Length: 154
Image 1 (cartoon, rainbow, N blue to C red):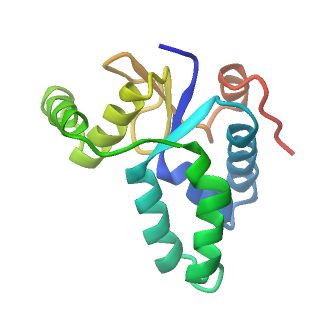
Image 2: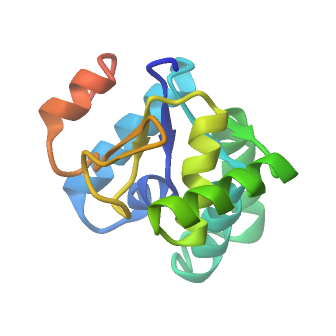
């Protein structure tokens, strides 16, 4: 596995949150992902983000603005797309690790993307699932900076 990271939907969502600390971290991660091939997302994350942006961020995004954001920010880092293999692996992970099906799809996408880390709040920080280490990017900035050395937090 490379030292790349997989970004769960919540990392993207906090870029538009009212919590300035989480917004700063999220913005830094996204900026780094666009500059260097260190982070990626799946089509599932793209779909979940669009759903939340249209529902939760009312007034922040019109459909055309969201489309532009997807084109400039999300499409370039979206590297994992649905497949039967992804689904099969997710079902195996779900059964073996007793995590939700949708979290299992995220882990499966991280594995397919050959990611060493999964940045998310939805699983236990430090948990290792099928070789992927879960890291909550909002709890320990030193650990996050060690995983993403080019990360700039403003």
